[in-house]
Every structure is written in structure tokens, then in C-alpha cells.
Length: 134
Picture 1: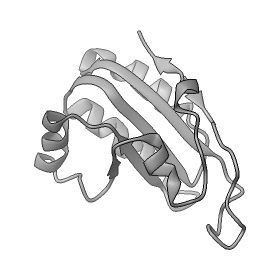
Picture 2 (picture 1 turned 180 degrees about the horizontal axis):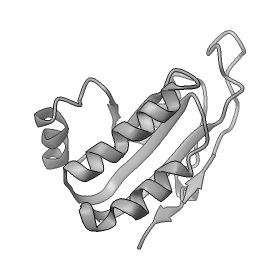
Picture 3 (picture 1 turned 180 degrees about the vertical axis):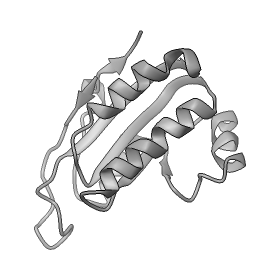
């Protein structure tokens, strides 16, 4: 599920498009070609925004299909803004997959949602982030 959990938005000077929402999605489990349609549906639910955060702390496995879905999200968001997609909580094996696919430069990686939001002055109650399950 997609949630927007914002508190204390930054000053207007801090981020030129700061009035747009930040989309946060939390994924869980393994993502491969069998879950492609579900993943695309979840990612499509992220509103047009400046920053999309994908919480992957509970993701156990990915394949190239999921990476393609993430790139499609980034492309969609870039049509209307900066298209920043931040990944939170990548396990080392998943991080290596991003590196092998040469995608590390396309996505910013953070330990926590708070870290991903911190530089923009937002605070996030990470306990309220809904988990996506299938």
C-alpha cells in the first residue's frame, strides 16, 4: 500500500517542488516475474511526486523483472519532476544486484525511511508505513 507520512514540511526554499507529495511504499517477500503485475500495480499507486521511497527492508529476493519495474517508476516520475527514487534497507545481496545491473547510480540507497527523508526536513513515523503483501 502507498502511504504519505509527512510531518513538518520544509521551507519553500528547501525544495523547489516541495508542495508535491512524497510517495512511500513498503514491499515484502520475493519479487520475480510471477509477481510482476502486482508490483507494477503497487508502484503505479505512488502518486506523481518529487520523491518516491521504496522500503525494501522486508524484501528477500528480486530478479531483473523487479528492477525493470523500478526503472519504469523512475521514468514515470521524471516526466513531471525530478523523479527521485530512494531505496531503503537493501540487503547486501540485493544491493549487489543493483550494482551488477548498473542501476546503483539511478537510485539513492538509505538505511531507514527517516534517513531518506531527513535532508528535506520531513519526519516520518516508520511504524505507520503499511506493508504490501500478497
